[in-house]
Structures are given as structure tokens and as C-alpha cells.
Length: 204
Image 1 (tube, rainbow, N blue to C red):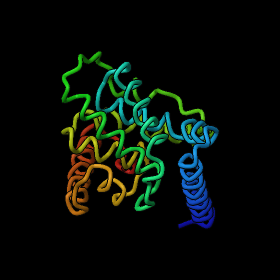
Image 2 (cartoon, one colour; image 1 turned 60 degrees about the horizontal axis):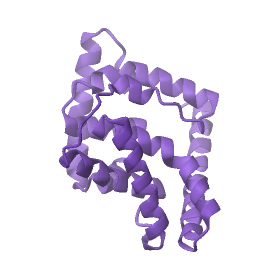
Image 3 (cartoon, helix red, strand yellow; image 1 turned 180 degrees about the vertical axis):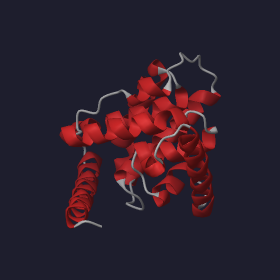
Image 4 (cartoon, helix red, strand yellow; image 1 turned 30 degrees about the vertical axis):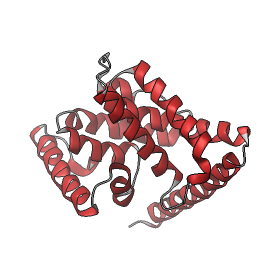
């Protein structure tokens, strides 16, 4: 690995660790009833959670309702956060449960395709990160849309939500080996589709 690339990865990891620690501090303040901490946590994570929920429910109105429910739960139950996982993992686990519950209730869907969901801008991204995300999305999103729901969910969490395999297992409530197997086959299917389309599989 080139020194510049290694340094860039170390810096990214450092920023992620700093934000994770900051998120935990925010949840502690929320548990103590601090509304400003709630506003900061919402501003930091609402777009990521909204994108994830949209991938499940395909309905903007329902997704908005779910986002409200997710952060209301955080406000009410922040004291229950046990730091077994990161705050972002905790939020996505809550969001997934509520989104699946919303689908089970059979509420009407207004179809929103994957392009629209991924086009939602995240104002917390810097220009370089935003450009990299657009490039990655352009390569992968059409392929991902052709996968089974369980495989799509894994790749959405790994690539678009930037979760680790361990965090994905926590979010979806599946054994780690199950997640690894789904990830393996999802990547295999996408690699085949990229090859068939004449694209570089390095996007994976």
C-alpha cells in the first residue's frame, strides 16, 4: 500500500473513532435530558438513517414517520444504550426494526427507485467524500438493485452505510457467519454482472 494511501486510511479511521466517541458522549447527554445534544445527533445521522430506511420501505412519507420514531426512541431511551455497538449501529438497528414493522403493516407504498434514494444529499460529506461516493454509487447501484432483498440489505449496510460485517450482524440480528456468507455471494453476483457489462470489478 502506498504511504499516502495508508496515511489517508489512518486519518479516516481516526476521524471515525473520534466521531464514535463523540456520539457516545452525545447519547449520555441525551439521557440526561440535553435537547441540544439531541439536535446534534439528529443532524449528524438523520440522512444516513433516512437513506437506509428508504431502501426498505420505498415510501418517503413512511420513511419520514420512521425517522421521527427512531429519534423519539433515542430521546426516550438513551439511558438504555449499553455501548455494545456503536451509536450508528444502534440507530440503524432501531430503524431497521421500525421499517420492517412498517412494511408488515401493509401501508401503501409510493415507489422510489434506488437512484432517487442514493441521490439524497448528505450535507455532512466534504466535497472529496461526496465525489467518491457518487463514483462508487454509479458503478454499484444498478447491480445491487438486481440482487435478492437479503443480499441488497447486506451490501447497502456495508457500502452505503459503511458498517463493518460485525455491525451488520448486530443490526439485522443474524449470526456473523450468515452475514459473511451473504456478503460473499452478493459480491460474487455483482462481480459477474460487472464483468458481463465490461466494467472493472475493482469497485467492489
